[in-house]
Image 1 (cartoon, rainbow, N blue to C red):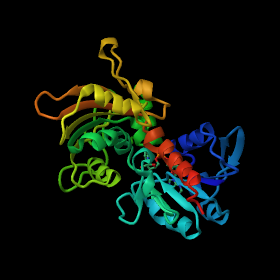
Image 2 (spheres, rainbow, N blue to C red):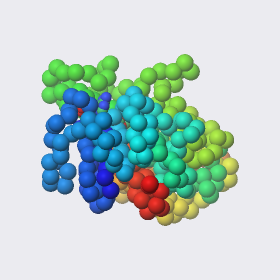
Image 3 (spheres, rainbow, N blue to C red):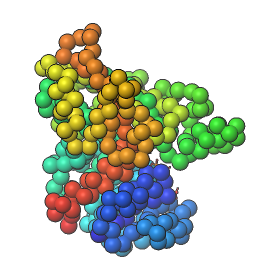
Image 4 (spheres, rainbow, N blue to C red):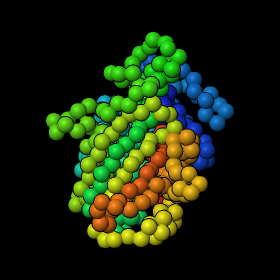
Length: 330
Ligand SMILES: NC(=O)c1ccc[n+]([C@@H]2O[C@H](COP(=O)([O-])OP(=O)(O)OC[C@H]3O[C@@H](n4cnc5c(N)ncnc54)[C@H](OP(=O)(O)O)[C@@H]3O)[C@@H](O)[C@H]2O)c1
């Protein structure tokens, strides 16, 4: 496979290169792509140096697949040009996610929607990916009617500049601000811009993307997304109401039997998911399972995952692996 990684110098792109290596993805030729600022810079992949190339040169080299993580604007402009050249694009930005003609895919949930004709495939938002991996097996069994989610999101979800802001603040250094406010020793209840309904774009992504991936518009969902000074992954407190009643032990069994999920639910030993443990892992970690005693058929759960891996790079590479395994790349 000739593989282009667009945004190869960024946080997600760098993780993409790491995940491709770890999973032994069959890369025969790598084309790292970034902005004009980075063309000619060298990046490491599998112990070799590769020069960053421009978008135009990447298209001319006709890769089989292009993994995009270079922002929505870049994707809107360039993904169609790659697709026109017959290159399958898997895009990490929000540019194509809600386009009715584009598939939005989490392989554990809906990989079967993919066909050979899909030339631009969207990778969902990081907070949505980890939540739907945990919700899907429960939805199949008990039918979800409503979800209330609050997130505690890592600064790595914002990109390189946000990590620098946090680290500078820790060292009392001046530097560029990714957020309007200090993030160290703070909690910011705003991720992305505000919309007319008073929600942020990130909150509405969770609502709309969940319904699209789970292929069920009847699920009611409300979300509060929050940035915290953490690095290893995003955490979520999720309250789920089902049509049918459930048994807690059966819920634990269903989750631990599901692909991509690790159950960490042992309160006697104080074992529960944390970003510290999820960091650099591909799974979605689920714990703190308990009945909501204020309402029937309702479960509380705590979901943590490394947003740069399952929330971005790993999910994109898994989509590419599925395309190869099912002969859907042409
Ligand atoms: N961080 C996450 O958890 C996460 C999760 C899911 C999705 N995403 C999405 O992934 C994308 C990248 O996020 P990130 O966190 O990796 O950001 P980042 O660290 O700021 O990296 C951005 C990357 O995009 C490249 N780029 C910027 N403008 C470009 C242009 N005009 N043409 C070509 N390349 C360009 C940059 O290249 P230069 O180095 O040359 O500037 C860099 O490689 C965003 O769309 C984001 O929404 C992020």
